[in-house]
Image 1 (tube, rainbow, N blue to C red):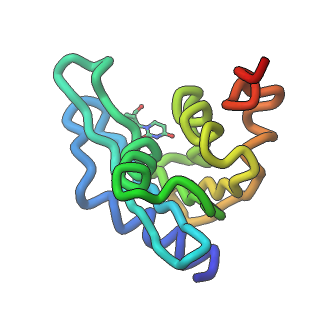
Image 2: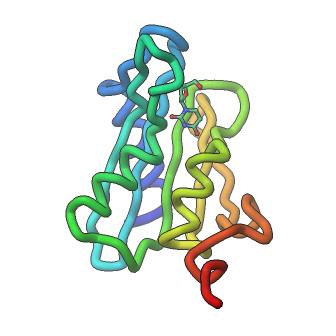
Length: 132
Ligand code: THU
């Protein structure tokens, strides 16, 4: 799967976003080394803080279906003028399973940029941090 194909899968998820409050749909697509792709969208809530981002939806789908390792890239697609970089909570959740994950952040016009997750969360706290 090419990066462009993964980004397209993320954009495709906008149709499932539940965004009555922000009107800002976000889609995500998480690629694993075995070729599986776990997709997600943002799901908002009247209690705003209970909202879940697209990236964490995709992550939870992967983990809850037994896929915890071998994650190679995640594409995140927003509709804004700026690239849709993951929020702090999503960076932390992704870091737990794949600190070196490639992150592809797309903006509304379809352009995207790539960085490694460890650049987005330098000196992150992960499973190794709990070792004594
Ligand atoms: N959102 C995501 O789904 N992922 C991001 O990376 C940034 C923000 C969602 C949360 C909320 O539904 C809407 O975008 C506005 O913050």
